[in-house]
Length: 64
Image 1 (cartoon, rainbow, N blue to C red):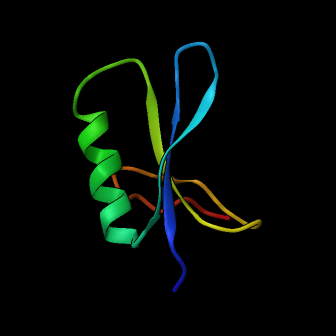
Image 2 (image 1 turned 45 degrees about the vertical axis):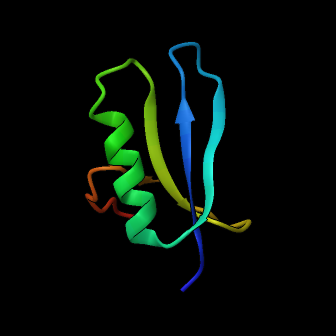
Image 3 (image 1 turned 120 degrees about the horizontal axis):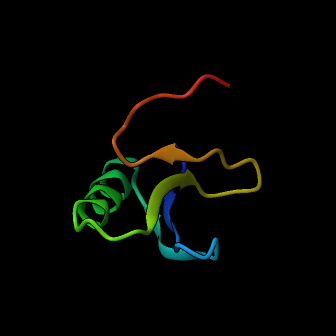
């Protein structure tokens, strides 16, 4: 398995890298922690690499 990163999108649509080189569980925990703060920002987990697919912080699985 590869490493994962946590991304953030603010209320203006700007996207930022929050953390990288995490295992999947660490990344999901961190994204959920930030989302629980209740700000307008959106947080999600992506697998590092070119073919990254966003993964919701709550761990739900999206169809491809």
